[in-house]
Image (tube, rainbow, N blue to C red):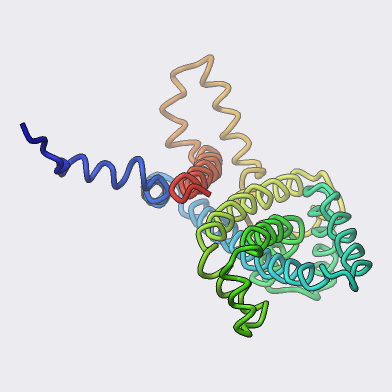
Length: 297
């Protein structure tokens, strides 16, 4: 008896979305979830709070996007510099550059960002930087200073992986410049999946760091920085008095179950900010893992 090797259409549909395309599945879940939450806000959250939420979400995503762009530019530049200096005649320069990068790496990320935000606050107070758009970009750039070495490590690993392969030697013999081989053949043609996965990972890390530092600043850990009104982000919204009161109701609802329905209608701002933040981080983590599994990075 001949076996039917054709797959059932439903199984083909399920296999497209579930086991092999988890990154796409979680991207759809993330976007769909944000749309559902925004519709819920539109129906039940008062307009001023909803507009603040929209602005905070937009600023958070813009800052995180700036982190990705800046981190990749700095990571690529530092990787190219280290590769250029990794020669017997330039060993001292290579060691000096490596030492400086490791020194920067040794600074805890939150401490580095607090120092950077203190400088940014001084610029804002001195009216050197008035535009909120520039403040968001500057915050993203400061965050990229503490994460760009992750990109440097990935690029260096990809260069080391392909450097000893035959096609690299063949291209060098043919007269193709070394940096053309690195950027076109190694990074562009053979490492895009790795770089995309790292971009998603850095994007999620940036959202976590931006929200964390804005929360710390908003609750007044640093008196020098908290005096300045930065553009709203999910972190600063979570630290606002209204959000704190809304979240505290969760504890009350544990002892008074009758308060549970009011969480999603009367206390929507704090619950909504917390949910959007956690939901976004979980989805980005799943998307990153899905890319790893899909491409077996």
